[in-house]
Structure formats: structure tokens, C-alpha cells
Length: 193
Image 1 (cartoon, rainbow, N blue to C red):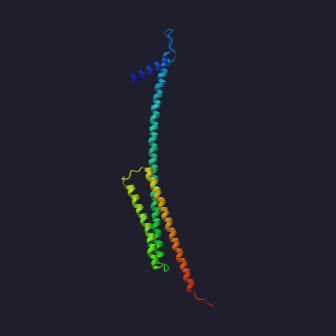
Image 2: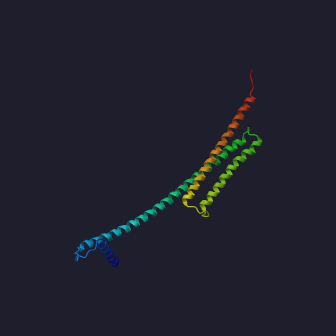
Image 3: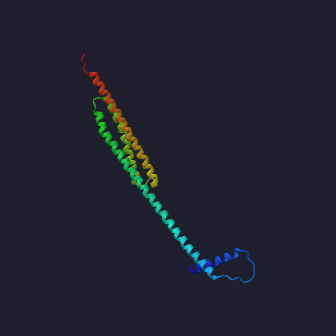
């Protein structure tokens, strides 16, 4: 370490002396205390620079860790929303579809078509959940945490669209049932003329 410092001090003095215009006018007199203080300040500056580089490296590692945690939290939130949407989808179909199919105003030929349209949405939902489960449980697909979070967010949006589609279909069938019920009441009412 001392040898490196001596070499550094010697190199600095040579640079300082050779950088100006060299004129031979006799033996110059230098104050050694200035050189010693310069060397000390250079050594201190090197130590501070080393500490700064270590701090920058540490901060970069912390930033990467924070990003990883943030991506995991995004993934968890997306999975939670996906599960909630699929649960809502299942509940809507279980409750409302039973009411629609048990209605006396739904014709027998419509039952198969209604069931098929709801079944298609449920099948798509189950396939999406299975695929999401595979992505989260295995590393067969080379995805970073950020890419996985984006993918899960897309699946969450798709599940919201499925819930909206089921809600719309349920509303439409309920309106058809209400219209047919009203139509039956009008056709079977007794007139008092």
C-alpha cells in the first residue's frame, strides 16, 4: 500500500513538473508540505470515491430488490383480482343461469343454446386459470417478473370482460323472461266489458 502511494505521489509530481514549460534556470525550491498535503488529499479523495462507488452499487441492488418486490405485489394483486372475477363469474352463472333455465318462459329449444353460451365462457375462464397456474408454478416459460405481471394484468382484464359479458347476457335473458311474462299476462287476462 505504501509503495502504491509513493508511486502515485511520484507520478503526480512528474505530471505537475512536466506539464508546464520546462526551462533550466537552476535548482527550483519547493515546499514539501504542499506536496504532502496534496498527496493526503488525493488519498482521501480516492477513499471517498471508493465509498461512493460502493454506495452506488448498494443502492442499485436495493432498487432491483424493490422492483422485484413491486412486481411480485403486482402479480399477487392481479391473481387476487383474477380469482375474484372468476368467483363472481361462477356465482353469476350458478345463481342466474339456474333461474333463467327454470323459468317457464324459456322454450326448450333455447335451453341448449343458453347453456352452451354460458358454458363457453366458463370453459374459457377455467382454461385461463389453468394457464395462469402453470405460469406461476413453473419456469417453463422464460418470463421476467415484470413480464409475468403484465401477462397477469391482461388476464385480469379478460376476466373482467367475461364478467361483463355474463352480466349482459343474464340481463338480456331476464328482460326476455320479463317480456314473455308480461305478454302471457296480457294474453290470459280476463276482460270485464
